[in-house]
Amino acid sequence: EMVLLDVGANTGCFSLLAAEPPPHRVIAFEPASANFEVLRLNIEANNLQHRITPLNLGLWNASSALRMCSLAAQGLSGMSRLLGPEESGAEGMFGAACHVEEVKLSSLDLVCAEEGRGCGRVVFIKIDAEGSELPVLQGAAAILRRDKPQ
Image (cartoon, rainbow, N blue to C red):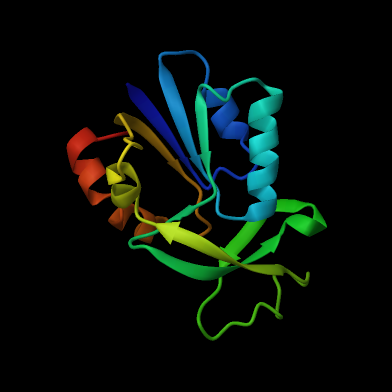
């Protein structure tokens, strides 16, 4: 089965477009809870539950949990970033206060190796990880070697 990955899926615009036409499926990764809820609702509203698998998880180079600053509550769903250990999140982004939440992270290689999950043959990866693209790719080394996606 051919699989497209949407890393940093946000509310699902790319996932919805990528789900058609067959014969592939989409795995959509979104760590921010507010964005994930909209992503899930968009999948249901478009009756694409059989083609898109949403995961409330961020991709990284290892399993971890970090704090994320999100401006989704201010209507800026695409504005999120992981906070460093010294950052409280009180400084916000672009002059706006952010919502801080702890998000789960894992590597793509670990996610695809999980019993029963399987990622099929990954043919394409879209990554919008707000500056965390390198750790995402580092955590996907085995998939990149195996499938050589675009």
